[in-house]
Image (cartoon, rainbow, N blue to C red; front, side, top):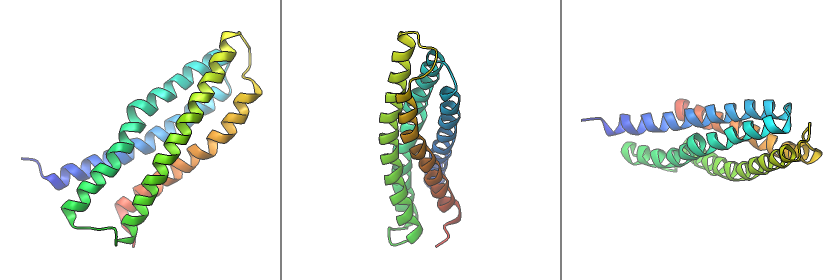
Length: 156
């Protein structure tokens, strides 16, 4: 029979790793899309939305659930500073995901519209929306790495 602690730890570690990986992948795809034609950008951004739906969203659900499971198994509580910080980071990550998802859908829509009318370059509205999305994605990466570090090192 599998050890519940190891199962919870594995799920938690996997979810955080997938979250970090998906964030990096999305950033790389966005960088490529920004330099592409509207048709190419539309296809690339469709991939970003797919990564969000299949990897990032489920990871963001798994992180707090497996974290809570680990808390109950180990007896840790929110009085632990590192754990409280992790909870706050998780809340901010979920908020960044929801805000970023909205902007990524907008970017996809802009690229789609430009591709439909056969524009050869992405419109200025794309750049404006991208400038809003980029800090959110970078912030999500930093928060993911911070949560990952707290999970491993428990420094407090």
